[in-house]
Amino acid sequence: MKNYVYWAVIATLATALLFSLKQCSSTKSQNYSVTKSLTDTLSHFTNVLGSQTASITILQADKKTLNNLILSKDAELARLSKEFAALKNITKYKTITAFDTITIAYTDTIACEFKRSGVINKPWYSFTYHSNQNALKIGTLTVPNTATIITGTKRKWFLGKEIVTTDITNSNPYIKVTEIKAAEVTVAVPWYKKWYLWLAIGAAGGTLIAN
Image 1 (cartoon, one colour):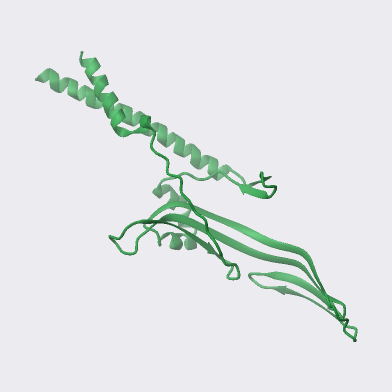
Image 2: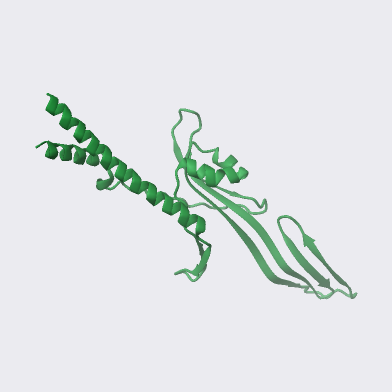
């Protein structure tokens, strides 16, 4: 009986050691991901469609790290995230829509000669304008915007069914989302990462030691 207890303890310790090694590897991988994402810079490239794509390394973090690095430093993002029961992904990006020159020529020339020019500078758009009897010219038209994309689960009430949802919020009130196509790829846990496999390995190791 004493030998059985002795070897059972060894098997348990072996299993705990394997779990610790696995957890250590996972922690190192997460720390590398955090460091990589925090030091990465935005890059642009021409994609296969011929248009421009902006790219950056994604931050992979647990809930505590996400709160410390992102949500605690962005009050608006933190408020939006509270609408979810659980978060899966958060993306926030800034854009500036810019037009160099827009010329609107009058079909009928105005009889009198005149010139008008000025600058319109509003929080959500800005441009310069020049107008005379022949045309209206709009220059340096810019429209800034910050978009927030949050994917997670929502519930209509405390014990309600969880539904995976994507919310897109624009800071610019003149920008409206007209269509969303969202999908989530579910990835099965590899067999070599399942907890019961490591438990079996630990138990088998303890048995071999006992023999």
